[in-house]
Image (cartoon, rainbow, N blue to C red; front, top):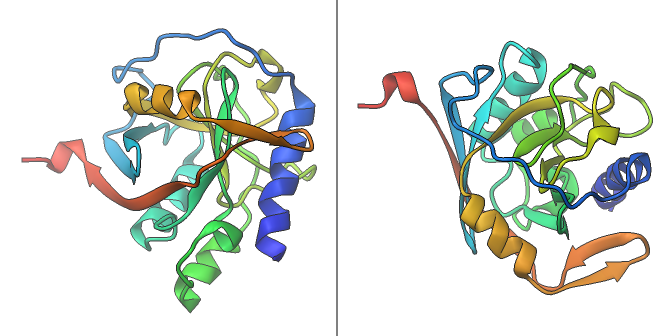
Length: 203
């Protein structure tokens, strides 16, 4: 229950910081900030591949890699899809279906220092959720579905989508409902599995 309140509180702060925007920017796998590592989230609506900015947010990227490699995001879900604004992954402490082992809990419970940068919040960007404390990011993060300049410099950008915009557009077409101020999908958008690979080691 604490985990549920945790990701809802992070989403509340994210929403109150900026109004939803409908603009969309093209994003490219050739972004100069991108490192060679990739993570794939396999959803019940298709796959999304992420690239990361290790020189922009090194501590955040390392933390996300560890969460993925431990399987922490498996059976988690996107609890929020606000078309033109964000699709937000739930905090793994409250969003997973499967129970967590001790090692997963220890990693998921860590907070990461706020690594704020000049990278803009545009469609496809990955941005950490957090509380009012700038150093409270944990495992919840958002994929930008539109440009949100009001978020620039206030949330840690750590990567971007490199493949899977077709999947994001499927998510944006799903039926939603409002719970208070949140726009949430009616059906559960589950992260079935995740995996990590490095393009430099890919044969």
